[in-house]
Length: 134
Image (tube, rainbow, N blue to C red; front, side, top):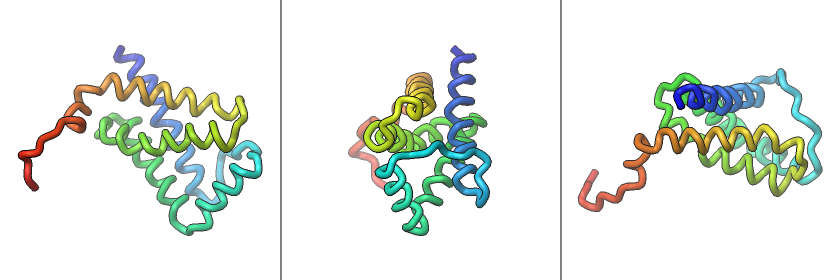
């Protein structure tokens, strides 16, 4: 179980850290595959906002490093959850190519496995405590 957790952390955290840095650097070190027109327009819209694409990539790097290093790993999983959902939906609805969904599918399986493996650490997020006040 521990070995599977380490492998899942490397897959998920490494992917987010690498692709996040790839999107932040002026000269990418991994060239993205060609995308269809709809997917290109969506990414173009994110980039044209002037902040959203950079915010997304910084979130990927920070969350990926948290998962990869194991420091604040449950928080990293929570931070990456909406990003992971958007990646899956992007590939299902906009990209729609089977080869392009292999890595996101592997990342999703890794993410879900880690959420399950660390479920005890995340349990308090789903508990209701109406008597607590700030």
